[in-house]
Length: 132
Image 1 (cartoon, rainbow, N blue to C red):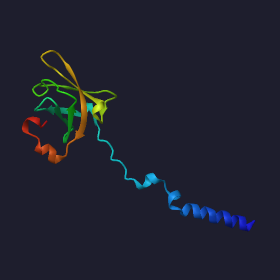
Image 2 (tube, rainbow, N blue to C red):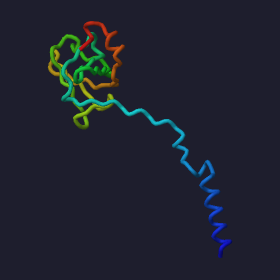
Image 3 (tube, helix red, strand yellow):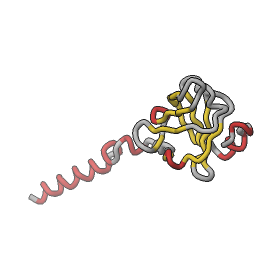
Image 4 (cartoon, rainbow, N blue to C red):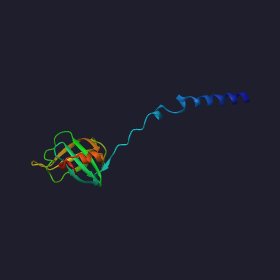
């Protein structure tokens, strides 16, 4: 009986000491960075100096850059736009967002291709007309 307990203890000790069994392979991989999302009701300004990119001021100091799939006519001169989330009230990726902008022929819906948060250096490097 004692030798069975010793044998079981030795087997358990060997299994837990084995590098492939002690921790899953995913533990060696670095964690993916969390996506940077924003709430549509926190957008308080926008700017654009072309018809494919819109920069949004979110809160006090954050700026997000939205790139459209195609041209969003007149978004670079209009005084107001709507930022709409397709799934809820927050936006994390281009598939989540749509810009609605007035144009000479009525409101247009512009699907967003990508969303990214700009760094402080990128914000400072924006041309005057593109800085919200």
